[in-house]
Length: 280
Image (cartoon, rainbow, N blue to C red; front, side, top):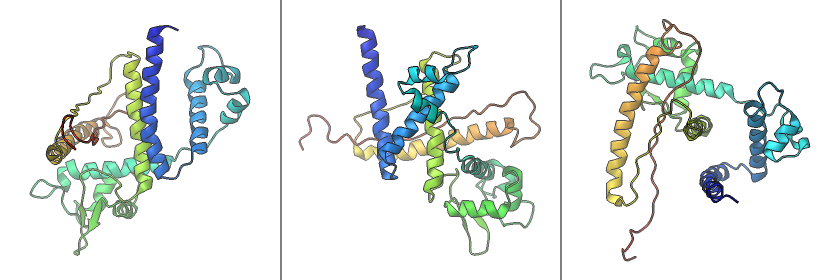
């Protein structure tokens, strides 16, 4: 066997195993059994092989997909049938709620005198919650949007009836369903970007990580706060730019085609125990 190919396979196997460990931890926590995961993995292999690895000018065949995936023709035939539909309603609900919160943060019409997002009346005045939803939430009724944001803990109702924003970004803290929807999209975006860059496709997509592995525990709280503050600043800056160029947020935008683009930022840490040479 070619030594270079063997090393490549070992590295790929090791990398996939690290990804699967993190995935298995989450799936076990949410009660997804291994047989279900296996069937989902097979379905993903068949779907990608059918739609992305065909021979130009030829119709994808069951036999070719079986050859590519290592599955039997019978399995490929079964898995090629339409499976469970993607929960597009949950994805759209997340997108609209995220746009409403982002508009609340950046639009000066909905800020207070201190420059922060103002507490809004439900439907009184030009700067009401209802007006905010009409501007950024599409055709979703203001009451429905309020129910969603209250349900996941993004806003609260004050004693005087006004609605106050609790977080500057839509994160469904109180909703496992919402968090799992984010998980499905964000992880796939990251893997797509890594795959794009590994292929050497042009232009390369921005993908950077900064990590040090011998930090004292005492420094972590400060780094968490620093990374959260600057990460939020960058997200808000990019959100403002994207909103000016997105047809949903700005109907005056002109141009051809339709593209989804964005940037994700996440914090991570891993407790490695005692530093080398330190007595336990």
